[in-house]
Image 1 (cartoon, one colour):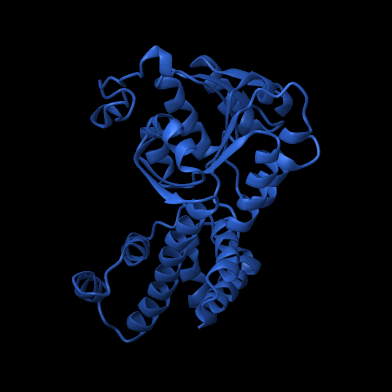
Image 2: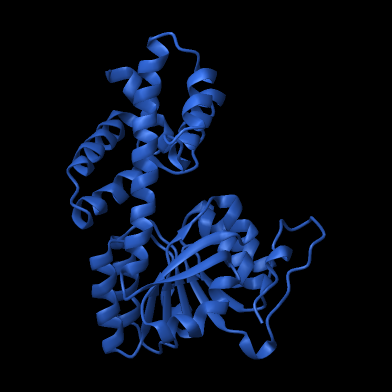
Length: 313
């Protein structure tokens, strides 16, 4: 049975994480144990799955791997060792190029010997065409793939309350649904390969677009001497309200532009959106983010597009 969602609170709050029946336990390998991947890995361990992780030669990866080792994960310095240790491979990396390198590139999954992997779950936000290409290569070698991009913060990854949208074969989805439920509060099936990433890109497109427009409008209203609390309340209680509007106004009103979602990742996602949605405004949004990235905001929070707009308007 799937874990009780009400018991997926923060560790230390006294709540118990329910485990699956022992017969449902899987051997899982994971590549990508950064801020989001670390939380996913911890929840896979809490659910009782055996976990092997790949540790890159970086201080942050070593720190994450050390933490996961203390919780029961096996740590490997080579990807091939993970490929041979797990029947399910979880990938959680920044972009399609990285996913392709891990799965179908030189020294990747398909080039390795002694592979035990039967299914790949790709949590990355990738280009749908790349996902379909990879899935085709893997299927030819008898390996299934689901694109399982996620929405949520680092905290939600740690709490097991991500939202996951899935693309791939329906029967493969049903077979692996319990694994996905162990790291999330919502799992939905979208359709064939690439469908999950298409829906995830739609989510990111709407959110990033709303944030960018909100930033620009806020600057104009500020310069018209309209109090921020007035237009925030008015727009927030009208049809103009949206998740992106609330995110940006919270940043502006609190002055908290600490990094939560990197502007560089937003630029990558909108670049993918230019290909798949082909809406004229997408190019304008991409150029705005590219300008902010080139101006030095690439590694900062996407909300700093507000600061960039103040500089150029």
